[in-house]
Image (cartoon, rainbow, N blue to C red; front, side, top):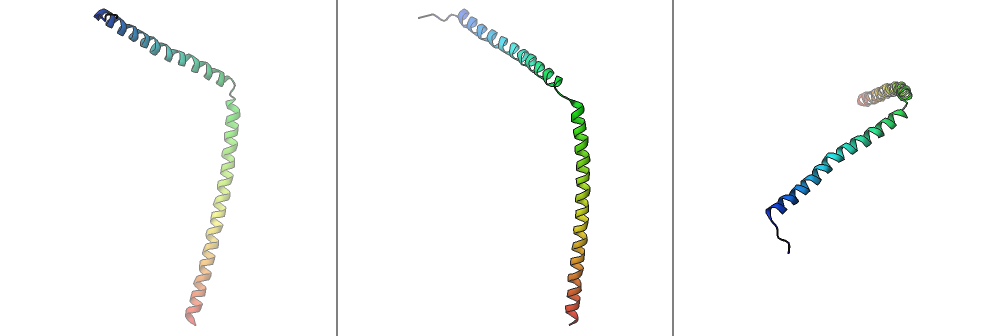
Length: 97
């Protein structure tokens, strides 16, 4: 059987520490390089002007929809007030009898 001397233990720990250091130093660099290349490729194919035009068109469309919904809400409130006035008139008419 192999005898474990302090030098062998320290050597083993040093080898493991060196391997961990290489991995921890190399992996972030590799990820950084790959992500940078992917982002550059993505940015080349991106048309920001078209995105801005689409966003502006969507904003205008949403504004028109909001105006329509506000009009619908106002008409519903007016209808509800009319119906409530009808019920109030009916109640007043019934209380007279």
